[in-house]
Image (cartoon, rainbow, N blue to C red; front, side, top):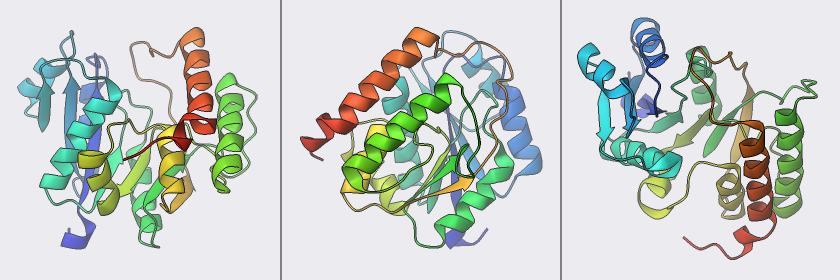
Length: 231
């Protein structure tokens, strides 16, 4: 892979013993052109042990930092490794590696962030996730003037400048309100259509109450908090 095409797949993992082997084995087997790092976020199950036994590229955090700290650790690894692009990639098997190349091609058009969107092509979905994403999309458009069809998508690619922002300047996670903030700072954001697979195993932490609380926090942050946020 040419120097200008160095891509790192960052895989935050917390208690993903049921999924991590399938996720990483597929990347190693079918997409060797992309480097990866599993960031074990203080898991209490066998996630770290599996990674060590399988010889995976592992950044093993001794305590649970949550997504913000875990992802920042991965971005520091990407920055110090001189990567040009970094992809946020779930360890539960829902993100599909065949879309990474499409994200990279889109980024070559001059974007800072490229989101793998489930809804960018007018996909019809009456689920709570879709409804919540629509609400946050409207809030982002109201406050930034930019339409982001799927701000809650966790599959995002960041260029070298954004890697530096998350590694050293932003003590916030890769969430919709941070995307909104970066748009206000002049970041260029694009989307490409992707399909999200069902979770391979285990249970998502986003139960209905947790998901509703998350959406409310993101909405308030986008509409109010981001007006006072500083680097």
